[in-house]
Amino acid sequence: MAAKLAKDLTLKGSSTAMPKLVYGTAWKKDRSADLVYSAIKHGFRGVDTAGQPKHYNEKGVGEGVQRAIKDGLVTREGLFIQTKFSPPGNQDENAPYDFNAPLVDKVHQSVRSSLAYFTIGEEEPYFDSVLLHSPLRTMEETITAWKTLETYVPHKIRSLGISNTTLSILKALNDAVTVKPSVVQNRFYADTRFEVELRSYCRQQDIAFQSFWTLSGNPRLSTTKPVKTIAEKAGVTPVAAYYALVLGLEGITVLDGTTTESHMEEDLEGIRQIASWVDSDGADEWDSALKEFKQSIKEA
Image 1 (cartoon, rainbow, N blue to C red):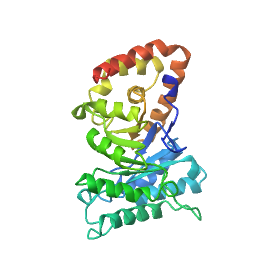
Image 2: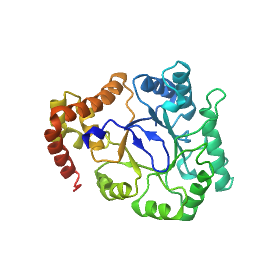
Image 3: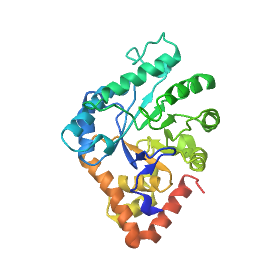
Image 4: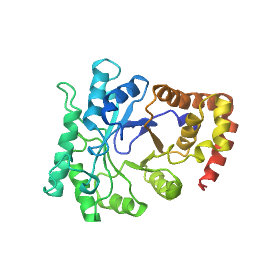
């Protein structure tokens, strides 16, 4: 299992590869372009954003990606880029659509706006994944928005998912749609009981779970004994050790929104270093630490 730590996840129903650490771009405002460029320069190959100017500078994220490609740091095919359709309740007056338009038109307007920011030269723009930022007011509206996104699959959008969802809504959505969810992006913290039940369902359905608030929402969990053990034995930072243990829960990728360049490298290299340590002589200690970590979040 540990050998999988540093390997990308392949999303259901496509050949799309999602890196284990995805760079999160919320709340980075005018720094978005530079931080995204730095993240790519230091090794990140996944970027998460949203068509939600209230919390994301999607244009800046696109500029950072385009600059990295222009400078030869990466190709578009070498990146996993994900955005979101944010419903009206999550928007301010700068929403990328007309508030008075029908829901279907809102979705189309948002997708077109997002695609425009990621147009690279003469190439047709596309997203590796687009999420509903949250369920809408009713299940009917949620399914309508989803089915509108389905019209872009598999060309302009490769995979679909949902964020901030409950298990019951996810099950209902999965049963109702043609293009099944490939990604669920939810908080990973004690208030949601670390989404143990929802993540179990995701594993059964081959849905990748993206965790956010992984570090900021868990000041105690990220300093527990198994984290300290892995950090010491593998010679990595406690943050990298913590992320590795979360990844060890299987079927998970982690949103990492660090704004510090040294941490970008430490997090990515730390995961690789732990995987290498486990494959050499650390397997037993890893298994023991992971078991203890699972017990601490009440995951059997």
